[in-house]
Image (cartoon, rainbow, N blue to C red; front, side):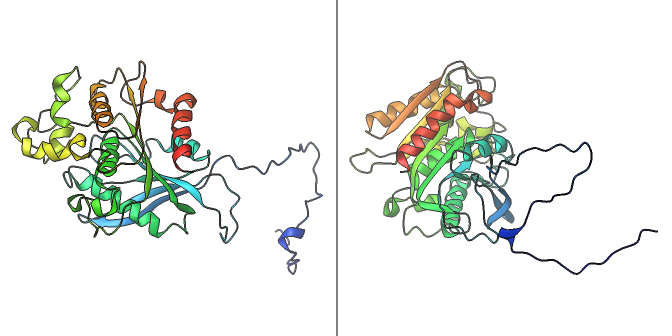
Length: 320
């Protein structure tokens, strides 16, 4: 039987704690480099209750030496990222690894969960994104969010949600109350937006080559408007068209927008972004457009350093 020697505590101040001098034969030593590479992730942070379910944020911190308890007063530019999902229930971890790496450039990133179209049709997704922005602003101190440097970024259906938020939710008194679940008293405070290959006109998805029929009731677009045929319900399609919500810049200038789309996208044809950018240019809005040569609908090409450098530079330009 092992004998136990119960020793009274020998306490020291944390700053005075010494390195151990114990050793065993064959022990090897590596130097400790106290330089965090990635930040902490706060998983499944609830931000709203809607349609009988809880909606969450996955909040990624930049690399930081947090105090215990966390009393640091450093605040970071913040991105709300809307994960694409063909408008259905999202797989919120789909780009988690890529976003953790991007957060290492000095951002807080909150991945936004929205209600899928099987739970709530359009415009529930944009409403949820706006609720998430307002919740994060209200909890800025807890997550070190700089409320004066906030942006939104989304891909695919999340790109559509990002664009809808951009077009209908950034002007304070000009906000459209039909696209918000909260009383609109002030703008969202978002200063820049990034759209990765989001659809912009669901009624025109079949005009160019695709690998699916976008008019069927069971298509992502049909589900978005209530699981009905898209071509039979133009009155439901019309409110989803991004361009129809964008005013001329002389009336209301929207925050800067970056659009990146692959020219071999088999799901959301490249033409969707071309139409958007043409419309915005004609209206004098601030838009920057990149064609990603040879890229399909999402995937690794959008997460290479060269592309992310473009996104990072755009955000830093407009969040300073």
